[in-house]
Image (cartoon, rainbow, N blue to C red; front, side, top):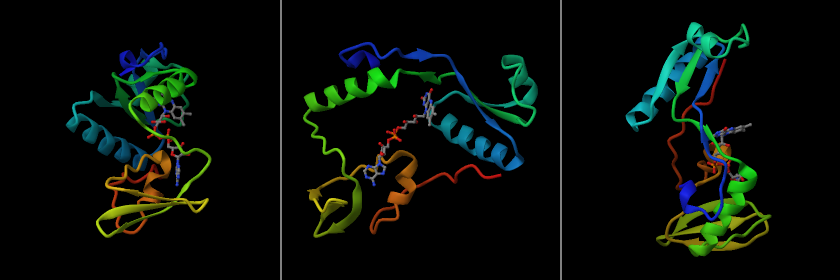
Length: 152
Ligand SMILES: Cc1cc2nc3c(=O)[nH]c(=O)nc-3n(C[C@H](O)[C@H](O)[C@H](O)COP(=O)(O)OP(=O)(O)OC[C@H]3O[C@@H](n4cnc5c(N)ncnc54)[C@H](O)[C@@H]3O)c2cc1C
């Protein structure tokens, strides 16, 4: 994707570890790793010893984690405007400074109402609300398979 944008976004693939401090968090990481592997992503469960070898200063509270060799970083200050430019070129329109308040399915169409009272009709709606996507999924007619958040 980086090569489709009109400027360098400082993409660097370095691998990454998500750590767990409790058995419940380890169970979550095991489910997450299994899901990611089923989608072709190289995520492996690692023990504390493996993590210590890569990161000697890791907190004593960490009991294990999930290592993903494919994880990396971009520079969001470069990537976000580049993505916006590419989306606009592809015909996307942006309505900023307003929040989606309600999404309903009526008469075969989606009706999206925002906090400022604007209404939009659409054939399809993509829930791209990130960490808030689960809350948005409570709108009538919307279902969203959501992994339970980390719990101690
Ligand atoms: C500190 C930190 C460091 C990270 N580092 C990395 C990293 O190095 N590499 C990596 O790959 N990932 C990293 N991530 C994860 C990465 O940021 C997320 O995976 C990515 O931003 C998710 O993108 P998204 O578009 O799904 O959601 P988001 O980027 O969270 O975008 C969701 C958007 O929806 C908006 N929104 C929510 N509710 C509504 C509503 N009702 N109406 C309108 N808008 C709404 C929010 O304001 C937000 O702008 C990091 C995350 C954090 C917090």
